[in-house]
Amino acid sequence: MGRAYQNRKDSMAKTAATKTRIYSKYGREIYVTAKSGGVDPAANLALRSLIDRAKKDQVPAHVIEKAIDKARGGAGEDFSPARYEGFGPGNCMVIVECLTDNPNRTFGDVRVCFTKTKSKIGTPGTVSHMFDHCAIFAFHGDDEDAVLEALMEADVDVSDIELEDGVMTVFTPNTEYARARQALSGAFEGLEFEVDEIQFVPQATTPVQGEDVEMFEKFLDMLNDLDDVQNVYHNAEL
Image 1 (cartoon, rainbow, N blue to C red):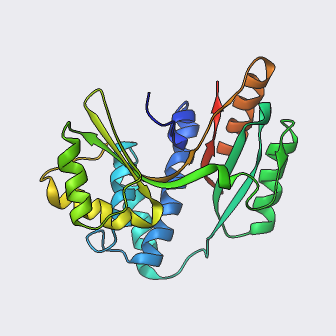
Image 2: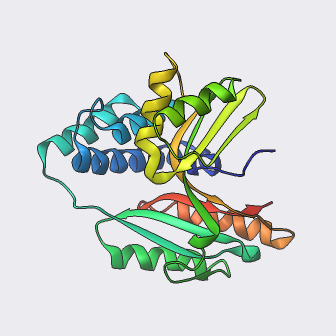
C-alpha cells in the first residue's frame, strides 16, 4: 500500500449544501491564487492546477470564471492564509489550512471544533514536523525509469516514486511543485494528472478506534462546515 494521503473532498461531497460549500471554497482559493500569481492559467501553474482540480470536482464554470474576474478587477476581500495544528480524537495529529479575512474569527471557530470534540489545538509547529510538505502528482503509467529520468534532467529533487495498479505517484518537496509539473508535462505529451496538488503527508499513522471514530468524524464535519477552512490533513487510521 502506498503512502497515506488524502484531501478534503474525501470527507465532503455528501449533500447539495456540502457541494455549495465546496464551490465556495474553490472560488475563494481560485480568487486568492489568481490575485497573487496572475489571472492567466498559462502563466500561473498553481492556478491552472487549481482550475483542473475544480473541474474534476464538478465545480461549475461560472464559479471559476467569477472568481477569476474578481481577481482581475483587483477589488474584493483581502484573504490571508492561516494554519492551525493540534491533536484530534484518539490523539491523532491534525493540520487545518484556512484562507481568512478575519484571523481572530477563524481561530475562534477552529478552536471550537477542537474543544467540542475533546481535542486540543496547539501552537505552530506542534505536529507539522511529523508531516512531509509534498507536491504530489499521480497519473496512469508504468515506466518508473522514464519518469525519474525526466525529473532528474529537470534537476527536480524527487522524494519518492510509487507504482500501484497502473498508477504512478510522484512525491517531491512542495518547493519543487512548478518544476516537477513542467518536467512531467513536457516529457509525456497529453499527460493527465489524477492528483496534482500540494499536501501534508503524515510520516506515520495513529489508529483511531471505538468511540473516537464517531468523534473524529464529527470533528472533520465541523471543520469542513467552516467557510474559512480549505484543507484538513491528519494521520488518523480508522
